[in-house]
Image 1 (cartoon, protein in one colour):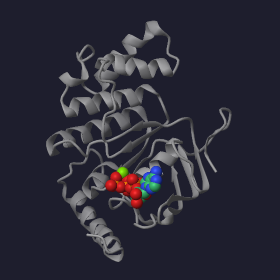
Image 2 (cartoon, helix red, strand yellow):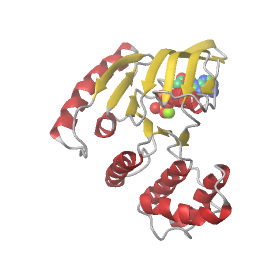
Image 3 (tube, protein in one colour):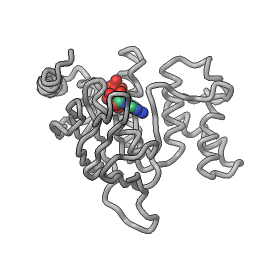
Image 4 (tube, helix red, strand yellow):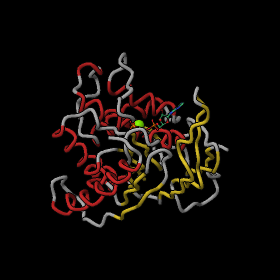
Length: 259
Ligand SMILES: Nc1ncnc2c1ncn2[C@@H]1O[C@H](COP(=O)(O)OP(=O)(O)OP(=O)(O)O)[C@@H](O)[C@H]1O
Ligand SMILES: [Mg+2]
């Protein structure tokens, strides 16, 4: 079983389709079932957050969608090759911010003379105008994640996969980047599958929150988030829904004896 890309001439009504996906790892203790029978559709332009306790298989699932690993059973189809963004920015330290983005453009086949302007444009989109010539070590953590976001957007994928991209940032910077991501999502129409263990972050960002249970990871529940954007993490409706989801998450964690 593998992750397949929809045929180029095929019109699909999803950015990603996961059908009965399971994943086991074989370790010293034998086979471990990490993900069990996960079916999710991400619609074109939809923002979905995948929420679950640490170790429940969120990164494993995202890696499967990215095609970095294969499911043990089930199938995954994506509309084109997804772009990926991780907790660690994974920028090349020997390249400037601009050149990191240009590399992604090069890999996409953008001709050399067009790359510089396109990179500047993307830097402007993530509000880093003027950072083109800055080296990675000259940038703050928040700025690095902005460059990483610009680099992911440079791939012009229909689907952006994000694995706790703001987890290492302080609360204020994270708040600002939530606003930026929401704005960029609305502006570009990209679909987003965003992984987090932070309930408030999940509710702040998503149109739909999918809660995974632990050991094995199964879909425990889903919530449509009907709160108008732009939202703030401290808004009352965000807090209210977060509380409801946290209760269910706590129940899931208790069931599995974790703390
Ligand atoms: N390549 C692998 N080989 C063996 N076991 C693995 C492998 N990758 C992940 N696992 C196991 O799968 C389970 C889920 O891991 P995963 O990293 O997907 O969790 P997660 O939900 O992303 O956790 P966190 O919130 O801490 O990032 C863990 O028990 C982990 O040890
Ligand atoms: Mg993870």
